[in-house]
Image (tube, rainbow, N blue to C red; front, side):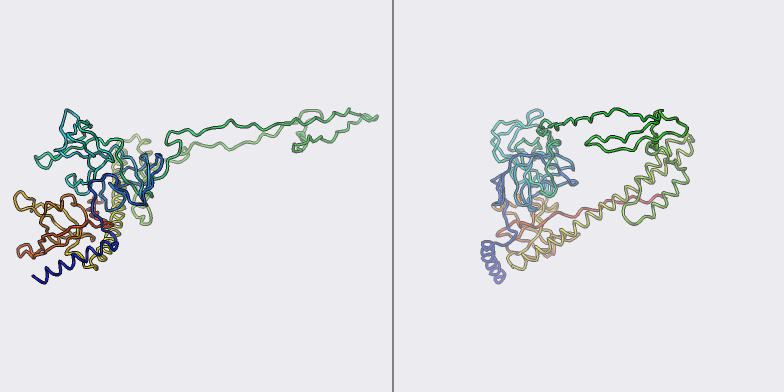
Length: 458
């Protein structure tokens, strides 16, 4: 045990040296500064941007270590006013609210009134509202400020706070790669138009008409066609067969093929034909199966038939196509989520290995609440889970200390220096912490559970 304690002391000294030497990825949460910018932040004039990816996460700071506060839908328009590295600072969409702790406000009708000046809190969408430690606003709202109530937040029967409509000054951070600058038309700004300059037209002088001369023998001489400067010479008109000289030649009419409306000439398939097409689509393994066009054809067939029995058959088969389409979409979503989870796990494992190689920390992992040791039925302890991998496991438990503010670090990857003792009943480490550091750059997003795939129709 004495040897272990000396190792802890030696590790503590090494940790301090490593931190000042620029150990990559270490940072403590800054709870008292709403806009604690890195040296790379550059302010910009406010301008509109469009989200161009599906369900993009907004974070409370300009890094992956800052927790997620909500999502922005594809096509949403936000206002941007600065960049920090690969992140852009933007206004919040209406779906993201502000969090007010219960002891900081009073409920007045459908409003929440602040008891004291407050910067509010950025809601923690990863670890829950109790773990919301980041101030949302740059400047505090004054005492007595009323905010629109969205929802009262409870933990069991205990009120822990309120979700309120976020003020216009609230900001979040979004990956710059997932947005684009809005066009003037999208942002409602009409571009300045200049009057179109009309080109000067010059009138070419007409050639003098020469008097027609007829020879003495009474024959008619056809004069050569005159070409006006600036025009293209044309062939003289040909006379129709049987026309007499002097009659006006009729121009030949060019007939254009009539364009039929789209779909008018495409016949409607019978139920048997569409059912055969459905079975062929089920066999498609490369790329996206053609479920959408097949659904359209079933809709056309249902609209054409007047036979109730055939209509029922078409509707039943259409439901089967719709189900297969949802199954295919679900599989693609699961595969993409798994790919992203595998990539995150790989990067997290590399980062953890680098930190463990420094031999600074007693234990490294994701700090989460414990459902067993919740401080109500059993003594309060927090759980430390492994980071990376498809199935996180419990590495140990940590005893809380008031001065360490461990509650504010829930949902984050942490490095813990302290005295570890093996609990014989739990067969896990129980750690008395000396210091707890938040690890920056470690993605702690837990892999999502794959959605249940519906059974294939017969």
